[in-house]
Image: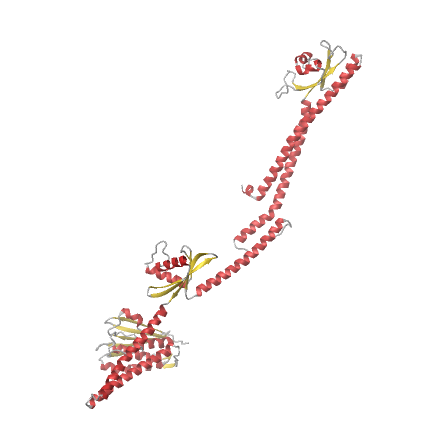
Length: 594
């Protein structure tokens, strides 16, 4: 079935049908022509013989001799009846009237009898039963009648009749010859048509195979140029098309890869929307934004709600007014600024592109700047107010005794030290955050370092009635670090632990030298840190004491400095705390510091 659907089959069938139709028509016409030709030839021959017999009968007085001559003119398949008058007529030898044409038959046949009555030559095709041309089993005869004038007073005729079987036999032979020629022509046409169609379609089949190869992405496929005609030119055009298609696809893939690389490397999220609001293209930051929105929605979204409602409304505004729009939304504790612009396809809008920028850090820095000014102002206002008040007391000579004067001077001195510590901490933190911190890495004995820290805080711990203990292995050995900076870290952590631990509490310094680095824990049994404040303990000016009372308040910069020092050592620090159960600060310093 596939052969008939192919080009070869269709072309072969078309040529075969066309040639068969032409041969069939030609055969019918030739058969008709030859049949009529043989009949005409037979009619002309019989007419000529009849005329000759009539002439012989009229020109010879010896009728017997004339008849003998007449019988010699006819062949074995032809019979003659010579009618001189109603009573005198002769039959050719071998025809005695049993199955032959009789005078009575002629007399009863109006057309044949016209030869005698009307003196005219007639021709008829009939059987001897008197019927006209038959198609049955009766024998069909061809009869020619010619007038005969033996005597001027008598009207006679010469009738020749011959069976048409001879003519039909000749026609059959001609028909067989024509049909044989037609059959040979059809066979040759079939072979020629198949060869021609195969020859013509061979390059087309190769192009078909090459087209499938190109469709599968094999653009190096080439079609051989087998001919120099239009099909050969088509093969050349196909090869050029494949090369151009490969070039264009490579260019498109390069542009697509470049665009994908640009989108993937962008810090901002990008979402491309179609005109109906369907998401077409996203990059990783945009996917994180959508994941945050899905999480906020409970990991469920209805049909048509693939984007936040604010973003959908923004898209509708962009499409309607054909201008870029910008909004800022907050989600999952983060701030996002969305800038959406229309995309044009020549003359009409085909969608929009949204650029999503995470502004959380910028907003946090803005808040930090605002908080920094407020915190610095708050931290400085108290000592400055006290300095101003006690200075006025000295100027106004309010202190009457030397003891009161010394007490006022001591307060002024303590507040000036506090201001100095605040300024120094601010300078240290600024240098650290500006990456200006410098570490003096050296081999330091960990045991000696932690023992020195414990000895330094034993006095303040006893004053507060707090048990300060050290937990460590028997031997720690040396470690690569900056001992001064690590001492500053431990000083800040232990000082915070002592200040936030009630009397009879415990503060423990636990040191462990692991294979990967140095692990140190500072634990206390103090009041703890509220859970909502844990993410911010390493921010500048963070204080668990919201009232900022003087008894327990520091500058609020110690933990920020600690984190910067640990980060400079390429380590990390964390905090765990529960209210009224205590707090644990843990930091780890790796062995190799680059």
